[in-house]
Length: 174
Ligand SMILES: [Cu+2]
Image (cartoon, rainbow, N blue to C red; front, top):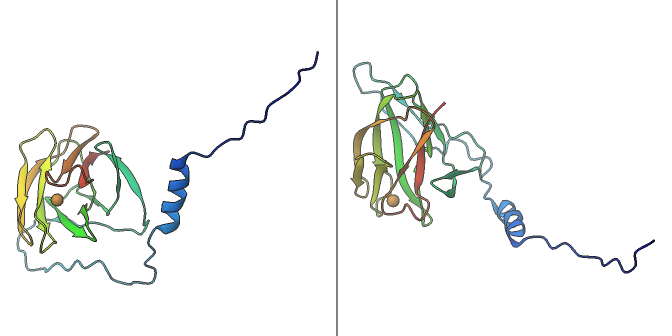
């Protein structure tokens, strides 16, 4: 009995893990910046239209897997019971993104997406996977388009110019 020569095999941490640690250590912290949302909606609209506004509730560095990519979450908006929802396309420090990243609502709900390209220099686009929704947004342009939320699960919306760079979001029903 008794085996001899038990080799010690050092366990090497994966590169990916090390990178994750690095990334979380570097996540930008903009503490104590009150009221930096930049949203200011006038109350001049008439009628009973209601609009969901993105809620950017802290949690900096939150990511979500959308369209097969890990993307930074720039807020979530709940469109349940609303007739419209605002979605901004923007570019910050070379990063192209939508805000909110996730729009939730009820199964099959139709909602008007009020689009705004918040960048004054970069053209964007709003398209919904599997539908004919495809809206070009010149710099600083606004537009609106009706979308139908899925019967279940979620569908991807994306900028057709920056989809591969992670400019994607999600229409999702609970
Ligand atoms: Cu874009």
